[in-house]
Length: 138
Ligand code: TYC
Image 1 (cartoon, rainbow, N blue to C red):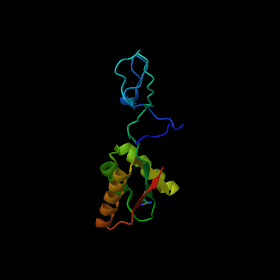
Image 2 (image 1 turned 135 degrees about the vertical axis):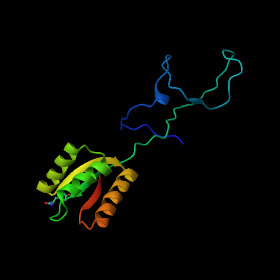
Image 3 (image 1 turned 30 degrees about the vertical axis):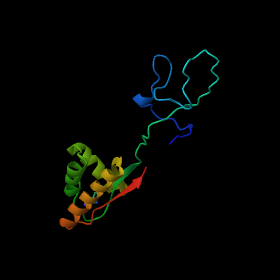
Image 4 (image 1 turned 60 degrees about the vertical axis):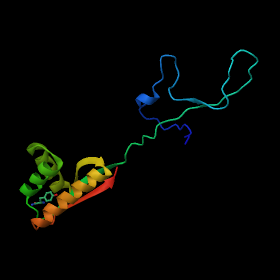
């Protein structure tokens, strides 16, 4: 499949880095090949640039919501365990959520974010705390 070039700029992959000759690797020459160049050959070809299908995944923010009952220490332990936060960072995030009502624990691709939300909700339910965790597209 051939994709039209768009203005949507993104980092080039190694496949797309021009070679020393200034050409982008990978173009194909369509049409019959000239057997003997320079002998009245009038073949025309189409240079087709192909670009690899490398879509960046959409990112999702994972958010913790405040409530009046979940112990602060429990929230800190969840942040350390599920989001790999240091004790100090976990404490800061917990206090932010406690004071503002909501706070970000991290930003991840869809399936990673989903797994983290599930882990938080499962551990909260098992411990009978009403802690809520949600994800939103960034
Ligand atoms: N507000 C809770 C308390 O005072 C602590 C808490 C913080 C709960 C963050 C949930 O996401 C939360 N015990």
